[in-house]
Length: 515
Image 1 (cartoon, helix red, strand yellow):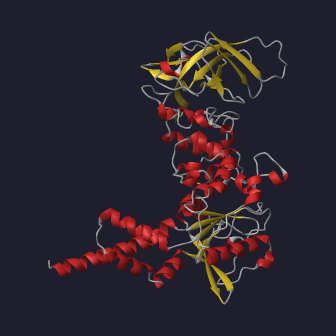
Image 2 (image 1 turned 180 degrees about the horizontal axis):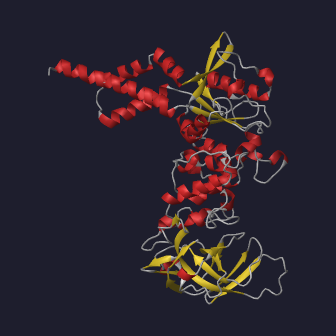
Image 3 (image 1 turned 90 degrees about the vertical axis):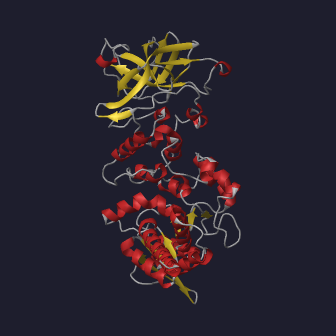
């Protein structure tokens, strides 16, 4: 083959690769529908368009040809690296602005079927939701120089279950791929007003509702670039018109970290995945969604898992989310919760709020710091018998409660080497055998142990008490030594059960439970 023929084939291959990446990116990485914004003589019009329109629009602008021409001049890379660079270039060219906001009550937001067909001016006379859409589109066009924008109110046909399912599963990725996310804080006048806000306060110190909604959590951490706007659609941080990223502003980010419990590192650069489960659940614990199921669906992208969207299933959605988490997570701290248990399994929480009281920030890296020992069972799994987990099972006795009120939920337990007092949820059980199932024990062969050795004498730094399940059995002959004959039940408690060992070393054989 001649050199010229080889060069021609190489350029043809490059041209095909650019076309393929261009088409794949629009199909897989961009929203199903976008708002196309045009402006002529000061008159702004918008049109709801699909991916075919977007593809034709950028081809007419010769975007694939320009990308090909640039890469053809410098054929210094090949293979996957070249394809990755082409994809980054395609993403840079195919810009859209995405909106993050709190939905208005009632039917004030413009919906998909209400948007007029064809290019038209936004009918602001229809109400505040339409005025918000107009301000958003004007910001996208005038400030961020983007022809395309996306809003969850009108860019999803919610009458189509397949489109709704794809949109919810893809939403984290759509926010991440956006040129910039416009975060509209409708209850915050300016930066000074944001600085006044405090969790649990009312009046002028009340937290903007944007920080309390379920979906806005992923909208906060997913975009690579985010710009905050106050109630008057002025940026909270004034800067050049090209400034599109408030993640570099410590003033805003430190305040948001305080309001949301999201660590500064995650606000600056967040990577989705199944790690730090209790910490991420803590972020969601103070948030609410109008639909029960959305509390689980809004966490799909944060944990990077796939979950079928089935509205009408209620809290089963969160149970299914936890099922998927447990399949890929192997640290005991996933059980660092308290409160109401799931109706589908007593060892799992009912919703993210159960992690609010149990999550201790200093535990963030405690499991990863384990040296020659491991903490707890790392092979627990959900089975058709329940949660299969090895624990350090320690039988306890109920202390005298004769002086407590009849409706008291407090239970005090004693063991030869520790005492524990818990607030029980539900009717106080009687005639039961009780045990403490320690979760974060240290492993030694086939056994487990807890101790209170000072750090200087121990290979593992223990920064907190030991965490445990409170267990009960209606079998009066139950024994921690013959668990196969005993059906242990995890009891619900107001707080996470923690114990301090009163002895330097307590060691037992580990017990396999099905909860």
